[in-house]
Length: 332
Length: 248
Image 1: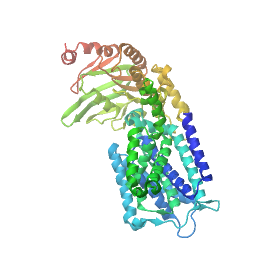
Image 2: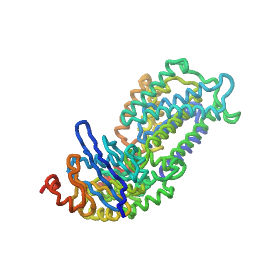
Image 3: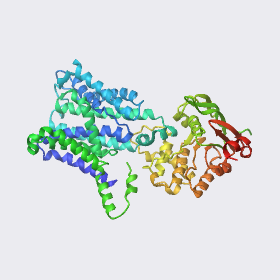
Image 4: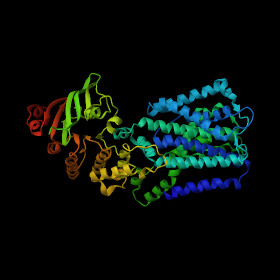
């Protein structure tokens, strides 16, 4: 328990100190990764926290991003104070509607229904004038709060993103040990048992789905502000798949897994795209990334955050002890 | 004083296509008694429990809980109204501790579950209810043990404790003795005898000796229908039961 809290504090501490040593490229990259981490955290609430595998999470991210651009005034600067809540609200309202319908299904059907809703949203921005079509739209001016928080400045955006990442992490950590979070965990393990105890499980799941969608919308807001540009790819199923892979890579069932997974995924992507390392082969980066992910999932069934426990178990195994017992019931 | 009927089933039937799983079964559970339902595998006992608890709607018939018609109520609503059930297959949460399992069940009855900033372990009402339920089921010494590490018998006790944590008036227990050793069975029977004070208990069970020891009323089911119902002595000497079930 203590070592986990320590890990998270050290990780956030390093992120806070990183601008002291980083150049513009590094700041931009890590800002992007922190936005992905926020997005991954929002999905972890559903997948790891509630046992609902959503395969259309990019839609909430994309709607947050598009709302940011579409609501920004043509001339003048929008205030973060209203633009951010508006983007989050747009994603939350959409998540509430999608959740209300899709949560009537279970298992594989739920996965497919969430995918179908995301594809609908994708085609709305892809094929209608509303979202600027395949080309996407540019953000006219980046939002700010007066002169002291101008998100157009990379360092300010970095600090703002890190603050929100920490805030959301703390929020989800508190949530997971609250009665609401425990009820979600109960639903994940055995929903029928929860109903027998007297829980109407549907409102709990719908609340989790809406909160998750709202947080994904928050990540979308930050992404739109960072890039100053949105396109339909933000809502594509590739991106929904990528964020699922992030939390699987990091380790489902742990908030820090979403952090670790987002960093691992993005850094692997940078690595395989790097022409300095791979030369011409770099344009085939999907292959290297895909193979690495397949290998990691095969070798690390509990993700990167499960690695220390896996090593301990192996060392204990060499000494001839039975480690299966502790493995079977590792607390989540 | 007339017996206080807490749960009543009127002419309950359940059909799956052409198969009649439960055929016009009526029964009444009264406070302070154990009502056992026995029958061969596939006699419809578990289907009956699922209908009474609200997991499955009946094709025909009515269910009355504490004098109210609850046939159209969802399972959570019936549970809130005082109907607790345990499952044939153990359904405790293996990665949670004994206390946390009970607390989670008790939480269903505490208001303000949306306070996301409050640590669940500090919710005094649900923790108190959980401790009381665990103590009642004899799990005092194991409060902080993970449920996955309990023995089979202890897990069955935990199942009952989780049931008790929701403060039910009616307990539907689906084979609580399944797979238990002799000593564990004794402990569970003592617990049942203790629990029947203040509760109405429906016991679905295979272990005949145990059933005749604790039950005040017996209902015998064969092929979905009731072939005998009454006091243990009456059932034991019923010719139909002997022929159909006890194999004499």
